[in-house]
Structures are given as structure tokens and as C-alpha cells.
Length: 313
Image (cartoon, rainbow, N blue to C red; front, side, top):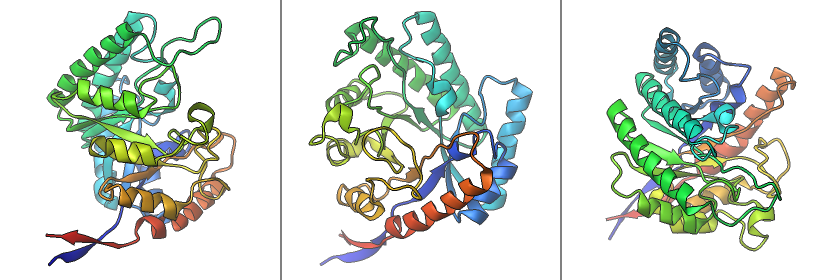
């Protein structure tokens, strides 16, 4: 005989929508809590560069802690954002640039921990394109081995800073890593035993990218089923499966919130948080963005807060 208890999926928002707009905690915290009715966020390093002078970073960390406490917000994690992502990071062809990217991440860990944020992640990097434009199905073995070695050192540094979890966000690009389930499984095995565990953040606009995976293979189900023990969170966006759109849910697309929540529930991932991650043109007016976000959350909340019965021993 079993008892039951209600289960809902934690819903939050990545602060990507704040870039060049609501750039301080005093601005984004009341929007998250009072306008959107959320209490879970993911910081974007587009709002704070961990290479800024130490006195500025100390004030930023203090302000994040203060605003989170004042508004009852949990800052679950910090992700690298678009600015740092535009560089090739840990897979740049020049090893000196890889060294800089590795040092950048270590600084990101230190800042996050000082702000009371103990999980950090994002995409890892990209090898350079070939002159002939052809994209192989895997990065060179030497680049992969170097990447794993750097991730090992980063895990060590993260632990020393107080970080408890690290995340890799797979992207639908042959020049980045990993972009297939098989690659992700291999990477997880090669990183087993890291001082801080590496987990995955899977994204609804990445796993569903039909031009790369094909119409029959694109989808979240395979990622959820194959990588469930290694998945730590999910990024949600509205998209058409043709590009990584990062639309909000005021746009028409192929992602149905209720179906997305059901799939995550069935995969046994109801305890993993989901973060709406949306980007807007810088020239778009602020009010229309707030209205679109409110609509999106009003659509997503009922879907991800749905209650199901899970058998308990």
C-alpha cells in the first residue's frame, strides 16, 4: 500500500530578459516577485562580469544577496550569458585564449559564491570553423581531451570557491560539445569523480533543432530518458524547432507547455527546476516586454504547477 503526495515542477526565470534594461537587483527583483509572481531565478553573467574590479564585484554580490532576501527570491544558479558565449571559450584554437576562458570561469565561481549562488554553468565553447565550411561530426580528439582536463581543473576550483554543482548546456552545433546524447553520456562518464559534479542543463530550443537532428530525431524525450540522472535543470523557450529562437510564450511556436511538463514528469525529473530563458531585441520597448513576460508566466504556471500523484513507499 502506498501514500501519495502532490508533485509540481519548480518554475523560475533566467534573467536574460533584463540585459541592458533591468540590470541591478533593485530593478529585477521587484519585477520577478511582484510583476511575475516568481521566487526562483537564474542570474546571467550578462548582468555582472566577474572580471570587473573587486570593489564593484563585492558591492554587486552584496546587492544580490540583499535583494534576494528582501523579496524572498532564491537565486538558484548563474549562467554565462550571451556576452561570454560569443567567444570560443574553452575550445578556442589558441590555447592562451582557452587559458583566459578558464580563468574567467574561476572568477565566475568566486563571484557567484560571494553572492550566495552555489551553482554555475553554461555552454563550454566552440572550435573554429574550417575554411571550406565543412563541419565534422566531432571535435578533434586532442581538443576533447584538453576540454576534459580543463573541466577537471575547473571542478577543483569550483569546490574551493564553495560551488556545489556545475552545469554543461549542450548546444545544437557540431563545433561545440556535446551536441548529441551519446557525446553527453561519454562526457559524463569521463568526468565521473570530479570534485564538484558536472550535470546537464538541457534546452527546449537545442534538443529540438530539426536542421541538425532531423525531423524524426529532434526532441527532448531522448535527452530526458537517456540522461535523467545527469540532468540538473531545464531551459524552456518557445521555438519553431527550426532555430534556437528563445521566444516567449506570447509567440506562436511548437512547444506546448502542458506537454513539456508532462514529458518532464514522466521522465522522473519533476524535482528539476525549469527556467524560462528568453531574449529580446535591444530596441524593443520595455513595456511590451513586461506584458509578454506576464502572459508567458500566466501560461506556464498552470502547466508546471500541475499536481500528479506519485507513489511513495
